[in-house]
Length: 170
Ligand code: ADP
Image 1 (cartoon, rainbow, N blue to C red):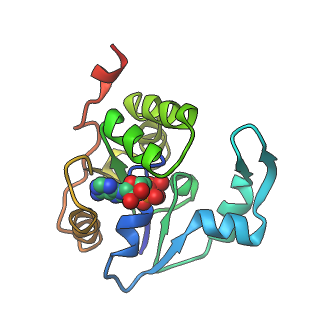
Image 2: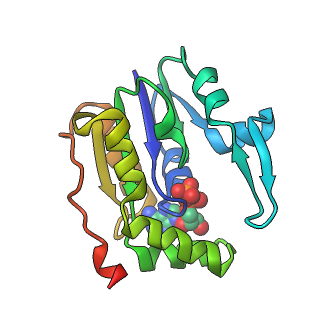
């Protein structure tokens, strides 16, 4: 079983997967990118690393019984289930400000969330039948972890496009 948990930064992937009780090996991909040097350059303006996606795909090509968490996790091949965490853009921006991200980054990610960018990429790569959207806006981290566990246990039907944050763009 290969599960990926993706979503715009600030949707709560790290927090929820840290609380998840699962037999799968949980990989926090952003830590791996930094620790293993799986990046092509440093983006000084954004104070971030530009991940080497080909290297990530290759590194996890044969991994089994894993759950990989990151806003890049949906780029991995052959995922059995793709969980896309969602969050209302205003709430997402608030979470990012509280995490001491810059105002520019908070706004950029809120807009990206309103435009369904990661959901669209996930559906495009893996197909709707493998995608499970989870709206975290009014859920605690433990409730989000329980939703992810339900996906892993086969207790949820696939869902994509059920949340609509386009009002944020008006
Ligand atoms: P991601 O890994 O998706 O970038 P994080 O897990 O780092 O997101 O969470 C971003 C911020 O939002 C953190 O400060 C975290 O404490 C907070 N947070 C995460 N999940 C929730 C939630 N379900 N409800 C409220 N705040 C949350």
